[in-house]
Image 1 (spheres, helix red, strand yellow):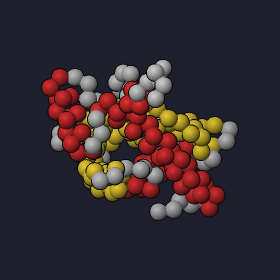
Image 2 (cartoon, one colour):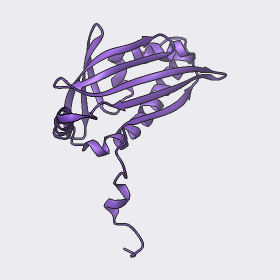
Image 3 (tube, helix red, strand yellow):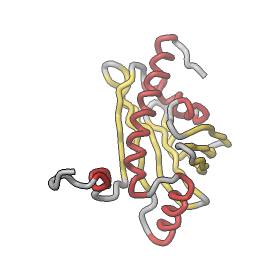
Length: 176
């Protein structure tokens, strides 16, 4: 290694904790088609690289997730359900606030600009430390690296969502 190069671990370490993320991708269908897909949380496993199953009960659902050898579940509550515009849910782990995940849809000349966003709710006090520790134990990802993993996952999710709704738009119906 050359002296002017940082150590490999220094290149990948975040410089500051990231609390909020957003990624966007244009999709070739109207906003209501995208909304119908993301609001059907049972379909989340089709595009998320971590979700393997969901169980919905009214405005609440449980998400079962996997990354590598790690498997965990989260409690989720739908907090925004505005058809064609926005769908969002708050995530908890063992009753502790973890994050808000959501999708915003904006019409474009070619279809819909979809923005997936994430807000980390593990910000303050003793509950933050417990939630971060449980997150590490359950997912294998330290809190400081979660945003980086989520950004990668959002890009995969949006690409898969585009493929799913794009095919549905061409076929005139949604696949299940």
